[in-house]
Length: 300
Image 1 (spheres, rainbow, N blue to C red):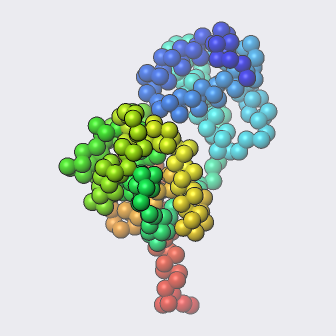
Image 2 (tube, rainbow, N blue to C red; image 1 turned 180 degrees about the horizontal axis):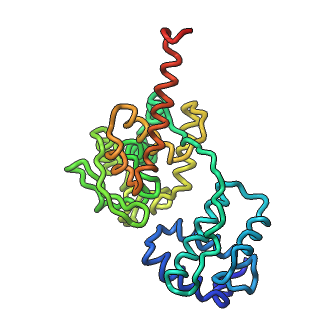
Image 3 (cartoon, helix red, strand yellow; image 1 turned 180 degrees about the vertical axis):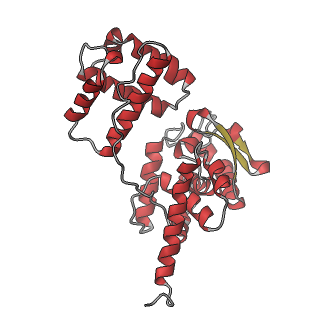
């Protein structure tokens, strides 16, 4: 793929979109910006020296026809990226018509997110806390499950974001949106144990504003913690598609299953649209149906 500098030479509108919109007005996270930019670079590379700002509907459809290997969900993501780009160009009076306007979004199969049962959560959280690493892992797991925060929010947590006296933590979610989340007493105990008897050892002689530290004396990465949680699940005999996000899904599902208000869960998760939160009501209903089917009086 061509370097970004080469692509920008023929796509000044793309350069403006990236620098003026994605990085400022749209206020996206770094992961989202990188994803959008990569997809637009692919489109620009496909049309070589053509300025993608002035592509037509037939051009976009031709691009999708060439991508025979992509799934419907991936195509939907690409279409969203392209739509946002062309809507920006319309807003800037660079073009008059969005070439993606008449292209239908593919039908997507609704997949319910994986989550852990209470029993599985108990197994996962039942780990030793003898070493600094174990204390850190325990604190991270308890904070993830106890707050429902994203793994990106957890690893970017700084000491100044902790309000231990109030049992609260401040996080910055997608688009740098700030929210305050409470955490329970047990999560607090594990966090304090790590801060008092683990974090300093992991830091060594170095300083860091981040709460959770790696073996390299710096902020732990999401990749590193993914490996940790996968290993812990394997040791606990949990055979599910594991990722750090599974604790966030479990947090929301268990809250709703126990009668929590949907709006409250939305606020805790930091969802801007309540429809995103509603998927967890399906998980909760699925659990109720499963329990009903197992009940002895449910016979025909």
